[in-house]
Image 1 (cartoon, rainbow, N blue to C red):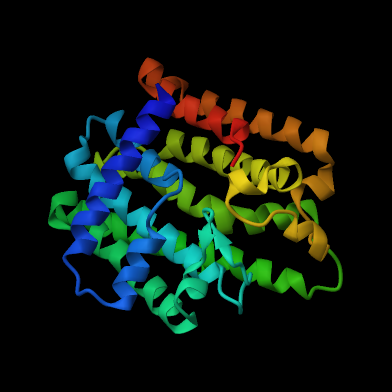
Image 2 (image 1 turned 60 degrees about the vertical axis):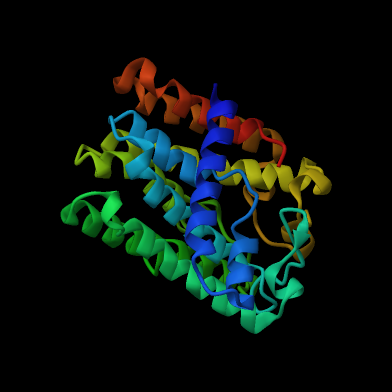
Length: 288
């Protein structure tokens, strides 16, 4: 059920991107935006749509923030791949945006995707004025200097630090860099319904950390062809990861514990939360 739902939601989000981006002028920057938003698992968008479902909110309304968070995630990847950041030449098995076009186009495409995210989340179809304001405010916090950008800044600083990060420091870094957008996505359905976000926040915090630990494990054990990107960069650079700090077996055990915590946080929703629980299990079972 989960993989089927994930694929359906990914297709729905792609249709929305086709509609929105297809209305823009045919320029290199919009072509780069389209390119950057193709492919990927679309887990964040799925979390928006699925958390909306369990609160009785249908895809006609939820598709706007679901596509919005995927636009914001795409922007973060485009900028993260730039030579001044991680300097990656491969993403989702294809040349990165700055390689296919140039640095300037990549910067502008990322900027445009970031602002598109807020445009989509504040679309009239996304809900009342109060709901849209809350979605925009919380997305700004999750994506900016209190969330994702904070995590990225800590990551950049770690590259020139005198000593590797501690477990506590890397957990804080990843709570921003990876976890903040996952948390926003999982809580989106409750916000659309003006409901309590507490259980979904607990779920997402455990899920986000498990996701990053799984990424670190894949960086060691994964297949670069399946991952669609270069692997073992952090190891080669001597950067601290959950695997380097915990060891491979302990990292796997910690990820499994976090998945159990994520699933337990959803018990109050009963059977309707099973697909979200399956998503948590998928996070540590995936091969890309």
